[in-house]
Length: 433
Image (cartoon, rainbow, N blue to C red; front, side, top):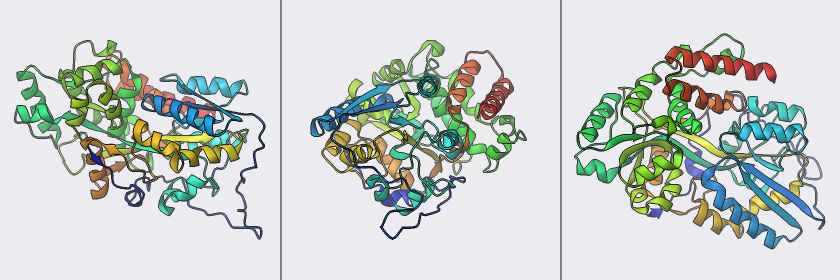
């Protein structure tokens, strides 16, 4: 494993530049040095402070538990608790919000302005523009997460890729080159099956893995910048752009393990770790999970863009936010400021390096796998698709992607039927906002 290069400079190149709604309006300074329009952190007293971190990222569980314990020890008057909820995250978050128990720090599953606007209008989340870690981000990055009112409402934490993870050792054994087109991928599947290797491990039981990791990157590839706004206005449909994604989906469905719909996420990780399957379509940060199952498989894993088309120039690696956090307006912002500073610059940084080991916008170096180096190489070369369309989708729509994919993979609807389900869910969420 070799050390990751610093990402601050890399992220300047346009990692999130396509976030169309997020304008770069800077706040002006007052005579006293504070920024107008920016809620300044209030000084916390030494009275007991409770802070709950609520998220859905399985790969961050151990790290957050360790960070909470370490920060609590350094700040005895602060008690941090952590909670991870998987597919039901948004539902549980809405329930907490409804009963007035919005977590102090919670993952923004869709960190764009359309999803967070209801929270902003209700005064439920804080402007975090003045946090120390926000000011450490590159200017381009800050602009990319600035909303149209000139404020920033999310704290970026990690980034990831969603691509094709493959076992290089298996590929080398059977003389297989990494596929750059859909036809090449089909030939790879044929060779693997001829040698009793299952080409794909797919978890139909984990909605997020088939929705966010297989369907969403392809839908983004075939979409236009104006499409989301047209969807909001009821003038567009997923049928307009997403049908080509099924060429890849159907190929994967025909070349995966038996009982796909009853296979959960950790099952396919174990199968991949044991060499039963050769390819996964999952986030790059699952390499940390894989390390605990099979360090050898983690070491020989490589990552490329999913070949949705027969044009290799289009089959780029999909990059997204991974983890971004919103802060409740009821939270002690001074404590929140100290917590994130503790993680990025203080004693918690070592925990981030050794336990989270995630690509990030703060330039934190860590020992990592060749797969993560592949992601960095794609970013350096500009061979990426940025997660911009998803920022424009309604709050929690990632769950709709997953459930619709499950229905399709399970044979409940045909291709157009799945896309019509997504159209309906989009409008339902929009109408509730």
